[in-house]
Length: 362
Ligand code: PMP
Image (cartoon, rainbow, N blue to C red):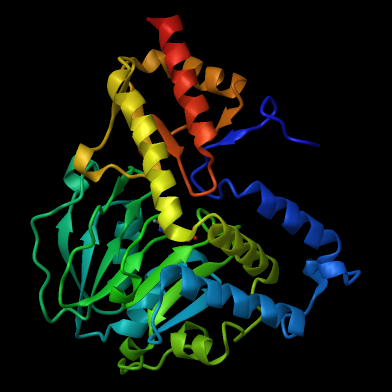
């Protein structure tokens, strides 16, 4: 079926979420007949030249788009970002050593819980007491902490580190919900991980970027699949990789490069977020839930001042083919996720719908 302006769905889901239309079309073609080989991408072996070319191009595009240096390795792994919550401390923390963590949301707190299984954890700051509505600024990280872990974007409550804290420690970042959305000095991180299902591709694969020099300093033996060095040595093919998910990531990375890379994305994402926050600020029916200085450009969270209007608002959104704006069960209210592939036109439609709803209800 062809999608027109009138039938287009505006997908604000938090993840898995919107992907570029051209990526979906090419992926669908490859499911039927990959590269005119007469077989589906779902049927090719991971050791075939076709797939090794996919993996190599995907890794090299990540390196190019993030401008990574020779020290940083790119891995596509299984197990979601949640597996990284344990794999990071397993590789970087001895039982008697300390790791520093910032607690800025539900995902950070899950990472902290896992790290405690492997060593000492110093939670150097937390915004929990104010429902994760801000990013702490007043904290110190002990110099001897093996690493300092932050979650760059808080997917559930809608806050984002606007600048990355500068410390002498190895920086580790969960970038699951803002990877490739803004320019950062990615080489300044020891390790970055991100579940693919927001800005990179479908669920089922996790991107890890790791500085190889921080590895191999742990005394405890590591299970084979948990040791990043084994994945590096085998080019992310220690076991069968998620072939289709990696392929769709490659298509998304090609798309990202074709539209101008991370710099172009950052500009577009700023425009989309500014438009929506402006409407929330000036529309009497709505209010934001986080402090202005910490507003996420990826997950815009807001409430309705009169909770009786919540259901009618969601129904009206549905009539306008706007989906995925119901807030997370822990935060309530609304959340509009503005990931890379969400067009500006969808944000304009959401804003017009909010204005229209407000006229009908004031
Ligand atoms: N970290 C963040 C910031 C997330 O948003 C999510 C998922 N929404 C996760 C970790 C967990 O990812 P996964 O489901 O891939 O384990």
